[in-house]
Image 1 (cartoon, rainbow, N blue to C red):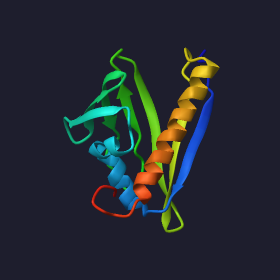
Image 2: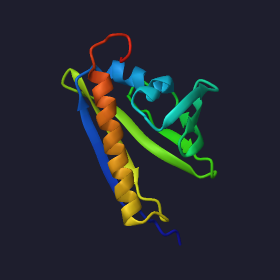
Image 3: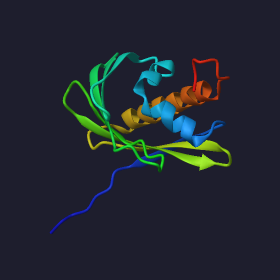
Image 4: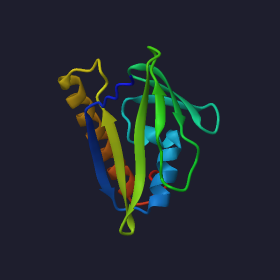
Length: 142
């Protein structure tokens, strides 16, 4: 008999005063991730959906879902260890601006402390994304 199970999850989100299309375009190009991800050293695109990052934790491969009009930016991250993690990310319209939403799941081998650290790291990332996305358009932000 199939036993279903769920993991602990946490929704992290932030409101961004920028149109959803701009936020989606900004986040779907990983070259822009260097503007808010201090842990990213370099980014290389290998196909329409695939990227390779050099990061503090070593090389990572990132694969996005098919490009879509719904603001779904889910992406699989494969770490140097070979472990693959699905990151659920979505940009929703919020008034004339955007709501950036991520859902984190606690992996079975992660302690509560590890998971709390992951949640805080994503909160920090979203705060930096918001700052860059809302910056006046001087050619460096959106």
